[in-house]
Image (tube, rainbow over all chains, first blue to last red; front, side):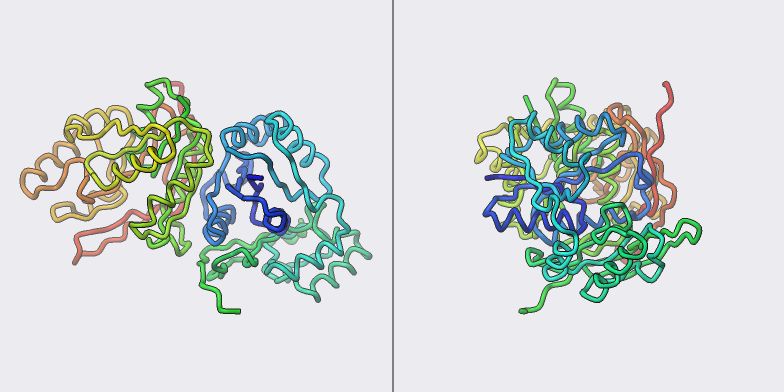
Length: 227
Length: 227
């Protein structure tokens, strides 16, 4: 099975990739859809460029597609990007978003290829526990009451997960960030030939919105040890 | 004919794209090979990211492939990127480089697709005259005796071309930069839906090497007028 993995660089798309490899799928392309409505329309070292560094670390071509960001057109935009690829399936990191899953399923159906969502409806805590064992995950965006500036740039390890579980109990913060509470970035994974090191970051925080982003200004790839 | 255009963002790859459209080809993907040996391995706002802005302006998906930069492997690396694309041909901006042309021809042959190099062996002055009529071309890299810092960021218009012709007569500077004398970037073309505007640039110049680059720190897309 030749597949493309929908890839944004966060924990879910890396899990999708990891799962595809475990199935013995041949991952031909990473596909990243860039929305023209988001801030990255302005070229200003947005973190979205970091997916390129990840693709390089993995060693698989990255296809960047562009979408106007209008919901009606997103299906067509994704379809236009996938239809020229020689693939039998597409793998997405959808966890609970019906909209996201339906969109990918529909495109796959129209193209006559299979659609996989390996994390679909998994228990968030179990899922997160598995992820932190496999990946080096860092929090690059935060937007929820209960998550303060200290979370920006923080590695998600066992202790952080425990805190997220407590924040879920107190403030209903989704443990896997499915409500948009946080965005993650994977700096290392078993299938990365090199790991990503952040050289210069800036925390941008808005006190009134309880939200912020970690802007990665410089990063590089570093050879991994023999471990 | 469904094709991919090898695309680096400079005048030659934009000409390749322009030519493909004129032939009535359906350009499915822009393909950009990033070399791991070059400086852009370090993530530091390299201009290579500007190709993404161009792809967005054109509205065609950009496939970024990665190559170690070793000459022996480059053919295989390019082949791996192209082989998963549903294309009948590949179009490259090769002008005089036998190495570049042979490499693309060989990959195309092995994949059973066609290879086009529309600018191949064109007269440099005629070619440049055509290009400056069609594109908004700016000099982003310079490396030749006779080309000073003033060329960095300069638009290549009729007057600039006249000067290049004189520099060719005096110092053998190749008028189209085929000897690596300069690198160009296309900010606008008839097939760009929006044009690229540089917001912040920095000239990096090395007096001892007679060379320099225009580092584009920020740029954005701007809607084009009705003209």
